[in-house]
Image (cartoon, rainbow, N blue to C red; front, side, top):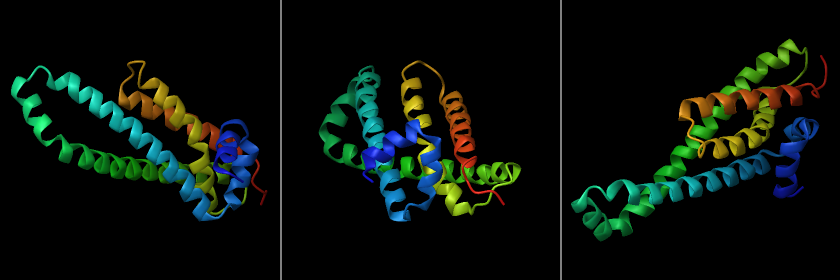
Length: 165
């Protein structure tokens, strides 16, 4: 199954999200890192455009940055990639931990690794929605809360398709 097919199924079909728990971990990590790369590029674009707007009020800073931007931008992208990776993996892990409680409430069978894989795919729609919310003026805290609740909702729908005990 290609990554585009997985992406479309992750948005539209909770039953397939549950089935994706059986995918090899390499395919799951490939999907997650593709998502991290896209988020890092968008974050980097936001950084570069926002930095130009914010630094125009400080006259000397803009001249100094133009002299050393060849070193600032690569390091900024690397740091943003690392931070995005770290935050996304922490969010997926915490929601998967909560998914284990949902699994027990639904009286379903599954390991943490299966729930983690399903959570990685269930986080697709909340991530897209959070990208849209970034441009509406909501604070980062509210965006994180909304994205987490949507992910838990998607994960709950997917966990209903896990086998019963």
